[in-house]
Image (cartoon, rainbow, N blue to C red; front, side):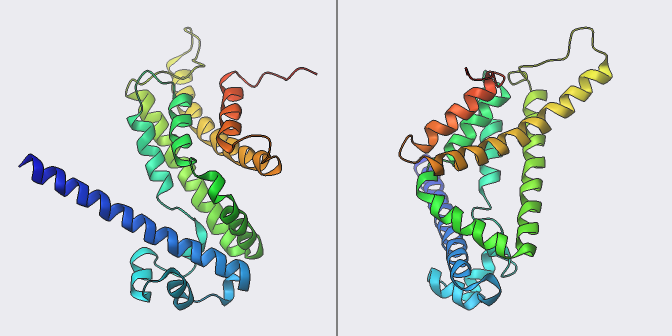
Length: 226
């Protein structure tokens, strides 16, 4: 029975990896075609052909053509939120989020060219840019909710707590504010890390830059020496 259970789990994991690979191939094909021809000229048929799948398969992953342009990896947010929840209780919310983001950004150096093309496509198509910003804002809100849930569940507390004399209302306000701030700051930290690394790729690996950015956040953003 145990062997059958392990086999089933392995097969389930393989199926999920195949689904992720197919969705990623479709998203990449959509971005590359849009960067070359313009998003408005790219058809579902062309995206499917470039990814080596049928049009029917395309619609198993995306409801509309535009959905393929909006987010390159639509499952990344869910994986990161689960990683934050599953992180050891001894980690602070910032540390748990850093570890979750590090895992998601492990292949950033291989992906940055696709990210650059994606940014070009979005800026050339304002309606896609608006949808992408909306998707990122929704992810940020859901991440903040997960951070708050982790704190309430008894994970390591936020590094800055209300004073002991704070009222219950002030404590509730801090619990509402801290997760939202951390989620927003973390997103900005990723963007700054990518921009900094892209301009200085020969000086450091991306993950080293990312870790340095989070170290500055953890230290309270001390001013560098003149």
